[in-house]
Image 1 (cartoon, rainbow, N blue to C red):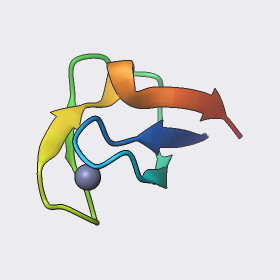
Image 2 (cartoon, rainbow, N blue to C red):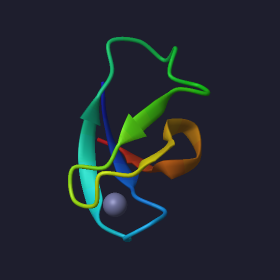
Image 3 (cartoon, helix red, strand yellow):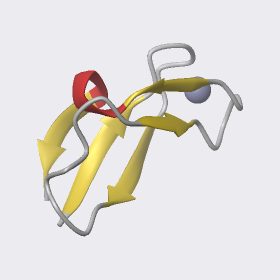
Length: 47
Ligand SMILES: [Zn+2]
């Protein structure tokens, strides 16, 4: 599955590929600003 995430720090959006829905509570590092954020709260769309 591919999700569209929005960084809470810089507001940029990025695609995130997850093998399963086991992404709750996981953290991802923003490719733009380098800060990490919680994946589950950053999901804005499932592609
Ligand atoms: Zn960012």
